[in-house]
Length: 207
Image (spheres, rainbow, N blue to C red):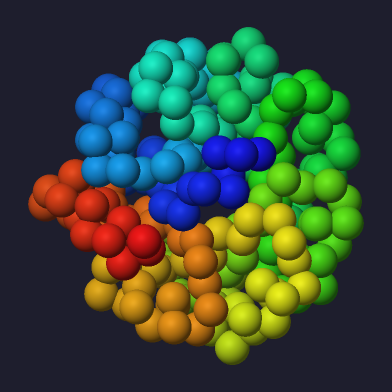
């Protein structure tokens, strides 16, 4: 939990943007740029291949002291050497995810409203994702929730809140002015011509 309290920039290694072969190099760039927590998201990848990829990436983050989270696969946390798992609003409960991940694994939960955010906290999540703030190709099935509730959620929820969804360097100031303290950036980082420089510029605004 201490890592989460001080972590403000969350990156996602997303198979929709990065090939499995390139992920180790991108992971190292994220670390060099100052990304403070990273999630592996590989929708559609068979569980066995996901596990192999997670085991390949985990030592990179362990060596750097950066928390490494698995999307949708809490049962692989221990065997892959990951830090924890993240589950969606419509996936398993926090309690089930924690049981699968083991008592030492951190569990994150996606939320899309104030009610879901407080419910995730009450259920024992270690952190929440809140969004999508803006329309995003990463989650086209979700309607953007906007910025109006960010401040209220930060007043109601005491665990770390990572705002997510369409956040990029060019709109980050707007998100922070709305009350956000921590953010997840996906395509902005992964499609940046210079990922390291981009991440460092984000970190400057977050400090």
